[in-house]
Image 1 (cartoon, helix red, strand yellow):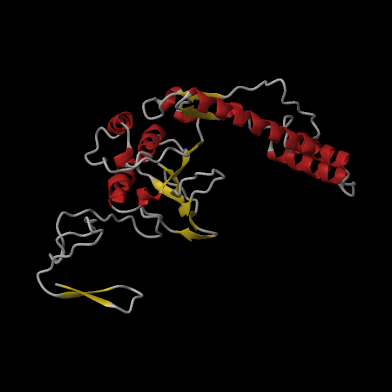
Image 2 (cartoon, helix red, strand yellow; image 1 turned 30 degrees about the horizontal axis):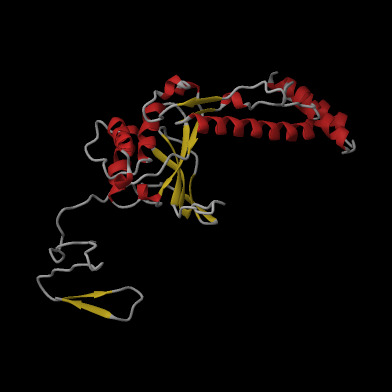
Length: 310
């Protein structure tokens, strides 16, 4: 249907429905007529669970993911039925799910679905600090970051960012991961984001700053999370930073999730001033050890007391 034909169809549609009632039956015919006569669409359902792909590491997780997709499909069929009156019946199950069992960090994602056929990647990969990883997870990190010099202290979830950008290449795929906020703090920023920005051309398109993960579990973990949306191609869409209930448009989102240039603070083995022998150090007395060549004063913000050290 070309533009002129569609304009004529739209004009005829308006004349046909001008002044009509909005009873349920008429509403359904209204939408069907609009879709068919104006947009040339006979089947209003354009999203199917056949278009979703996933990787889960064990068979139980695969079954849960498949069931969740079928439930979502049934719910959406019911809502579609209420709008257009197509009497959709989800049973027996006619669709299939593309959930694959395996270790996502060891698999070739192109064997699950070619990157050229994909539009979005999203996920909630596991968060595991370097001191808590199993031997198998250490090997996962070594495999993914094989050509990087320093990555040992990155959280396990960082491997999904590296894996994703290599899979995406220059395809126009939008990606978003829920992650631990350690990825945007301290030395992790330069370790992870500097090569992602400079070598792979990653751009952060939106970011949810730190929030506490909440669930209905009785023994729930108090995890501080972030959500980062990114791509490997330049996008003209507005960057946006979410913080609590507010959001702001940003000109650039850097590795610290700030609206600022992409600069990186590198770690150092020595102090600039030579005043401190150690920075943050937990001793047996759970105190900070300060060694100074001269007397100085440390003022604690929002505190009326000065603490002298020698």
